Image (cartoon, rainbow, N blue to C red; front, side):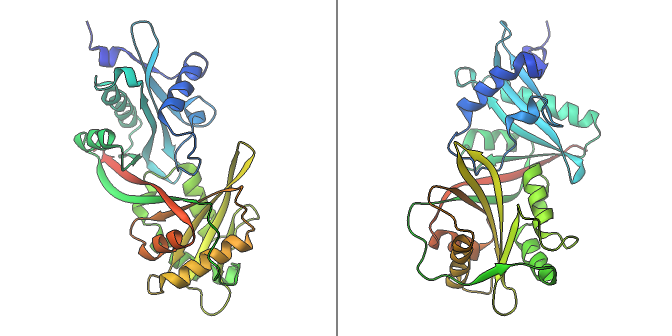
Length: 303
């Protein structure tokens, strides 16, 4: 007989496995964290250019699932997304088997890297990835706007124009290390390129980029609308500041963006900051954003 960890692997079929996979994801991933940068189940269900595998028991019931998709900006990289197992059958090698299936598929596609994101608080998953040879390449902190009032002191801001492109790109490049490109989802990568691309200058109406209104540009915040959740508007902010400026100034700029964008407390607003950006982290905290989680970005060399 073959190894059940291998023989129980199936390619994810949208019609056959889709409902079970969605239930599995609902059990594993927090429904109240729409700001989390992660690939949604839809690519795994054949609604996008992603794919996936499931692990089934002897009754063909889905007990584990994983999605994977090509990195749209790195042709040599496959992104692993939404690895989940049934809580009743954990610690039986199912997650390792699913990752093995993705690894074999990535090698078949001649990819050089596997990349993923994992919550820093998910100790078992972090341990598994390290045991399999994944290395840490960066971390992204996720914040959610709380119910407290914005700081009374805010700075006048304006929309960035094409003349600001070089300054905005410089700040954004420092705030978004290249290593984060490996495990970035499509939304994150598109957001970075459209909002901060020197080829386009000011982004379209859906994605707004703000800068300080007076003097040389030393701070910028990109604001992007996401899919609504339960009828609520969802917005993601990506601040980037010159680290030589004080947190109080960055806080005032961030508060100014929130006021300029007319964010309401009924809205769901999130901020994402690279772990090395100290000023941006302080600004988020002082502007009323609560730290929710830190996502570790990891990669595995396949050569």
